[in-house]
Length: 222
Ligand SMILES: Cc1cc2nc3c(=O)[nH]c(=O)nc-3n(C[C@H](O)[C@H](O)[C@H](O)COP(=O)(O)O)c2cc1C
Image (cartoon, rainbow, N blue to C red; front, side, top):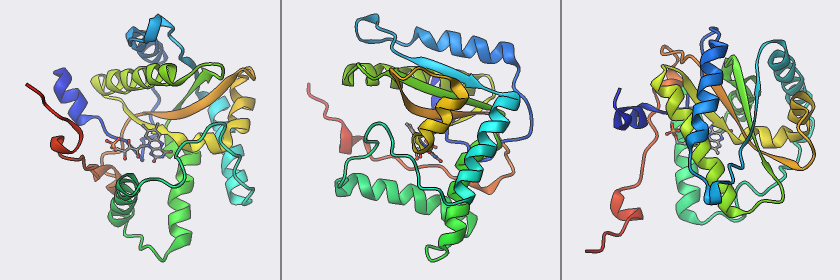
């Protein structure tokens, strides 16, 4: 597949098949993604891959916390500014509504919406959980680098027929994730990522997120 096609086909998958991922392939993707560029070649990404019984246990613990309505853990960094400017807030709401619409869950049905949101805790049934950390002493430049690493993982996965979903959700359970990963305190959890095979029959995977027109974000100066 051409890179442009891979880029276009990548999407956030929110229903995975019960099918394991070849550990060698996984290791190769995690390794190759490190060809991502970084400011000063700092390579600030710190990655933990959780599978098997370790992932099953993390999912179960997290789902229990959700079911018991235990208050969410405060993320270690501000994921979204408050307030979020209208233009961004509208985009966030739009994707949320698109996802719930395809599932037939109306705005008023808070319980069903919460139930769908809680599927994040099970990584949408993905067999691989990747957790991306960054040294908390680092700055904006290195967060940019981490983003490049994450996109590289997603594109490599796509090229190998694997689906992904980046999950900021896990920042609400950073302490729980830390117990599973054993990450040292000087690392901060940036986000998780579900990796596996897409359930192509799942309605939620039919959603194609919108994008702003190029004129809205790019200025071409000749
Ligand atoms: C850093 C990051 C965190 C995200 N967190 C979540 C999440 O917790 N749960 C989820 O369902 N989607 C999550 N997403 C997916 C976004 O909603 C998605 O990328 C966006 O709507 C565009 O859709 P697309 O990925 O299908 O192109 C996240 C994406 C990124 C880049």
